Structure formats: structure tokens, C-alpha cells
Length: 544
Image (cartoon, rainbow, N blue to C red; front, side):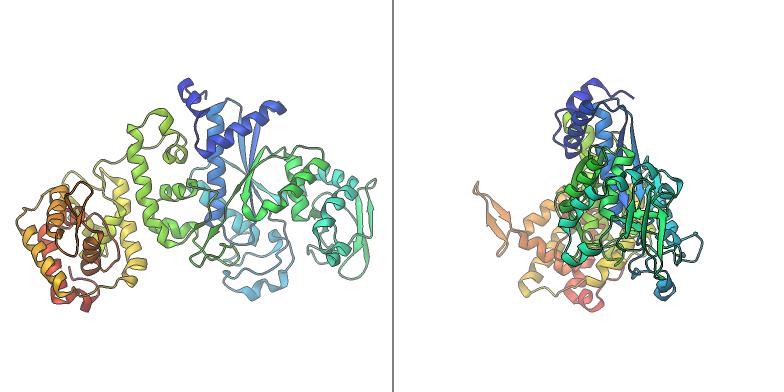
């Protein structure tokens, strides 16, 4: 569908990274004259899909939608699985690793499914997991299996061309290898007729005219086989370039670990008679120890884990933000992502077109973000409410929410309702074990008693702003009193840090006036009394 002219004009000026990439791609397409644009993402199903895999598809989709806003040229997205690769090591996160030992070096689609046997192979299982997650997010894509493409003959023409240009490909590859590897390297990997394994063996003969290769099989006999029909596959670097050439890929993004190999992929593609696609290199995701997340190691977060503790939109936001900066991907990043998404969504209706195109929610929702929920409560505040309410069920949170804002309900605010459930689970698994209350010092105890007295002067239902002002008024004392630039007195962050540490058992927390309004003035005064009596330190979690 043709984009609105004003929107299209704004898209040509937008500095959002998907539009910057889309404009480069449009220039390429105008030069090549292509009438359809193919976006591709690659997936190595050696382990269960992780969030990095999802992120690659999400980000590629963002560029695709940006491109479609710039022009009316049709597009496709192909999610390609390298499931014909040999299983070179057994993943650490399978139920019984010994079961897979006899299948080392066999194509992933020839390895039995270790997760209950409901799929024909390990590769098929992991492919299904990928597709399930992508379908959950509503991606518009076509799935492609390397095994199916090789065996069906889809790559035969390009494989024969690669065989005819064998020496040219070797000239690209050999300088990238060590001396020992050079002696045995071949871009073609035969599938052993006797064992079914993917073989890394030197070629004894390459016959481009006959379309065959000759090599020593595992039993020591020389074997000659055609390179077509799934009897061989290419090494992964030549395979990149061959696939681009065979399919006519226009755009593919990949992680920084591929960056040094990109010229090799490009050159192979050019040797095979095609122009290499436009690239976008993103930084890698890291676990909580700063190590690269890995499908085979199972470190970092899985998609299922994120969706256990937060909504899909917050995950999409995390993928959109700063893709060329390395980011840690572990549980601690979830709360901020949830609240940042809500803030961007809330701002969207008030923005002009050019600013909307810079707003991540435009890209997350393909130009049609949902209406924000009025009066919604932050995830950070919900987490603190779970703590002080000792809630194990979201109905407890809703009792507080309905008293605070009677107009809110699970029916009128379905996202908030989802967040209450996420907050209960996240708190139980990640916040509660780390909570550490401390006793107030004698000076802090005096300040807390004064705060309880000041709050007692306010009726239930007082606005968060009025409560916050009372909190400020009490905090304007040594050692928290500060003098602002205009000469007025303010309150240092240390005042609020003390409140968080003593009352919530955390180093930081939400806007305190909002917390009191939600939890209730009377409940907060009782919480202060528990802190002064040492009950919080003793129990670890306050009683309801």
C-alpha cells in the first residue's frame, strides 16, 4: 500500500537507523533495477533459538518496513536455516548428551530429536522452535531449510558454477587459512555415502565438466559423487556467498563476529556472478559476565525466559535500541525495557510525524502502535508494591490498584494486568533473593518518624504530587538539605536512597510519592513502624 505523501517525505529525512539503512537499500535497488527486494536472515540450528536470533529477524523487519514506507517496491523476508551443517559438538543444554554422541558430524537434520522425539530430527526441532517464536511475534516471513534447498536441487546451478570456478574460490579462501588447513581445504563438503557424515577432506579430483568431485571416504576408498542433489554442501564461508548469489539477496544483517569475513562472502558471491547484498553489522549480546551469548552454551536469556517476566513489546524495544552498541542481555535489563516502552508509547500520540518516525514504537508496531493505557502504573512501581504487599498473586496488586485508581481494571487496562503478573514472577525469582534491609541510624530513625507523622496529616487518596512534596519537606534537613542554584533548598538523593534501603530493601526505587499513593498512606506509615522496630530486617520481607 502506498504510504501517505507526508509520511514518505518525513521518512526520507528521518535519522532513525532503519530509515538510514532503507534509504541506502533504495539507492541500490534503483541502480540494479530490481522489481522485488529480498531480505534474508540466517540461523544456525545447532542449539535452541536465543534472543539474538529473534533480534536479527526483528531488526531486519524494521528495515523492511522502513523501506516499504519509502517506495512501493514489493519485498520478501526469507529466514534461512543452515540445518544441513554437521553437528560438530553436542550442545550443553540437551537432556541426554550421550544419546547424540553417535551422530557427531552428521547433518543436523539427520540427528535424532533429543527432546522427546516429536520431530524428525534435532534440526527440525530447532527450526520449529524458531518458527514458533517468530509466529508469536507476528513476523511476515518465509522459512527456508538448507537441507530442503540442497536436496531439491534449488542450489544445483550455483553449485555447478562454484565447481567450474573452484580455483577462483580457492584463491580467495586459502590466504585466510593456516598452512596445515590449506593442505586439506576444500570449499565442497561431501556427505559420506557410507556413514552419512559431513566430511572435511581434501579433493582428489574436481571435474567441472562432469559436475563431480572425488575424495577418500571414511572407509579409505576413493569415491566420486555429483556435487548436486544434496550429496555435498559448501563450507560455511563459501555457502554465505553462494546463497546470496543463488537467491538474489539484497539485504542481510549479521553480528560483529562475521564482520571480518564479510569481504570473503562478498567476493564468493561476485565470483559466482552476482552482486553482494547490502550489509548491516550489529554488536553482539553479552551475558551477565560479559561473555557472548551462545546457542550451544545456553547462556544469556532465551525468548521464553524474557516472555515469562515481561511483554513482547519490551523485548522488541530492546532490539531496536542502539544495535551497534554491545549490550548485556540478562534478567536485570528487563524492568527498564518494560518502562521505557511504556514511556515511548505514551509520548507517541503527542508527537509530530517526523518525531513519530524517531520513536521506537513506530518501528516495533510497523507504523501502527496501539493506544497507550491512560493512568498506567510503572513496572518498577509494581515490583515495589509486590514486595511490601508480599504478593504471590496479581489479584493482591489489583486490590491496591483499584483503591488507588477505581477506574482501572484488568478489562480496561489489559497491558497493566499483564504487567502485574510479570511483576509477581519477576520479584519472586530475581528481586526477593537479593533484598537486603538495613536498620536506620538514630538520625534516620528521627527523620522516618517525622515522615510518618507528616504522612498522617494527609487523607487517603492524596495525589502522588502532594505526597511527594511532603516527603521533600521532611527531607530538607541535614545531612540531606542542599542549596540549589537559585538559592532555594532542595533534597539530596541520599534522602531517597535511605528510604529505599530501609523501607524497600533496595538501593534504588520509584518516585516515592507515587509508591505511597499506590500502597496507601496508612500502609506506608505501618511500613515505617516495622522498619523502626527492626521487623523488616528480621523477616527479610515485610508482613502484609
